[in-house]
Length: 252
Image 1: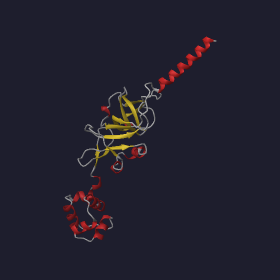
Image 2: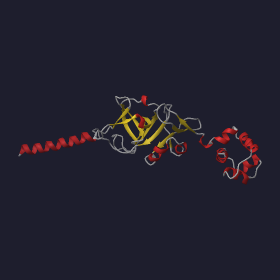
Image 3: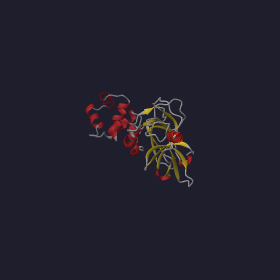
Image 4: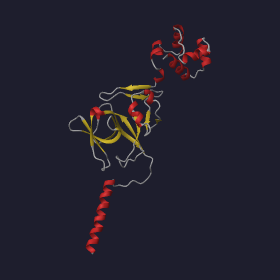
């Protein structure tokens, strides 16, 4: 740990190896060996390092200081959540795009993974923990595939509001964006698509790993959206064809 921490502290403070080695009164090559964990500093040098960087000896030896900008949120009945924070200790908004989805499902609790996700900014957003998710498919039409859903983190399943939309992370289905209701038995979520071609289904509470409530979305398509749903359009087409056949039959 000391090698990684020493290198992190030096780079964080924008110090060259030569400059820091002179501060610590050691050869630059020795400092390089410490940073590569080839050798370890003695106790007197460790005390000098901790004093210079204003750190406790315990933190220097036992903590991964490169993760100091990352925190773990504990929720009441969902799994722990890794988040990153900025210089003001406000939560960043990480973006989980379609390419990152598979890795996210395996590593959303890992700060090392979270820190590599791209960050997005959103003005005048209320306090809270937010994340952006790129959705795919047309089950939530008219919100189109490729849109980014900006969501706030839900700490308890009991906080779910019926008929609101959520990003649901589960063992069974991965990441889905659905309208949600609490099942009458109180132990399941009913997931509903706004596109009527997709049937509702339910998922047990114990399968839910993360839950994010819709706050806003970003769309990248300026096409005019029809007012009718795909199902309504299909029914209208069938109705028109039946009317045409009926007219032909009457006119014969």
